[in-house]
Image (cartoon, one colour):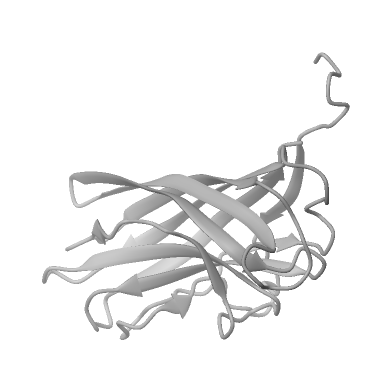
Length: 195
């Protein structure tokens, strides 16, 4: 370590304490994958002031993994990463990143793994464009039913967040079909501040 920037990498969030409840069952709508439940009122947070004014070299990295099941008819799963000023909610979310839809047809014990980075290009208060200028990109992978799939997303710009207030990071999921077999269970989510 050179000490050139006098900054360090740190884990900002590692959870949940136990697996989040299964999400997406019998629905084709976009739903929250980090549903608050007993023992799991836990969610990654970028606190107000985390992004610092006058800096353009801040980076955040995140990784996640979960289990997926899906019906035998053609089905896809779309995963998104969003920010919201309230926890346990996607009512007023702003989208950081939407991954390409993954074909999860006939998954019975599938694994979904993803990662991404958020780069800050400047910060400000309020939500007018450009207030806080974030760019996000990432890749997602799936393995199940003898089928390995992957896709990449971004860079995507988010320019309407307020750096001065808490921004709760959340994962959303959406299945293309409505079936009781379809479900995604988020088991790991790690958020790291890189500098």
